[in-house]
Image (cartoon, rainbow, N blue to C red; front, side, top):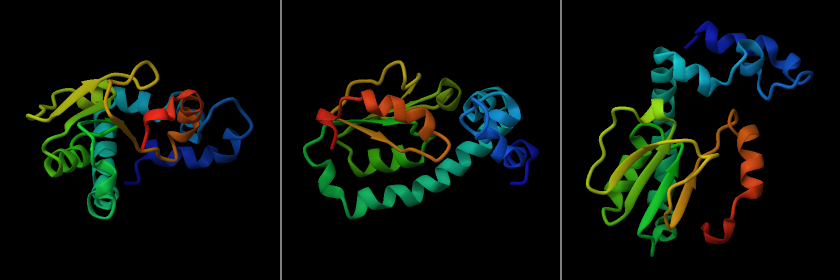
Length: 159
């Protein structure tokens, strides 16, 4: 999609290294991609569709080759779990799991869960629902926000 909202940041790539903004998107628009998507339904829908497409590929590995990683778990929280794709695949593949998706409120607004899948609107920097495991998929644009959080994270119970 060659939308100016998404192409404009590329013109600010070098500028972003010289200022306090963490990404070219912040430099170009004065707010994060997540804040912008929260105010612009068209961008929000486009971004969620792109993440869902990526999720099909990313989820195939844990379901296929790494199934043993999920053995012994009763619950999982998928942080930034997008709208439905990966979480639906995981909850269908592991029906005994309690699968919770934590994402920004505008992302999960209006989504209905199932017997073993629920959606929670919130901010991972404030709190994460309790579970046996946390699934966190970082993207290039989110890593600068997540690194300080991950340094303080308690990895004792993470697979």
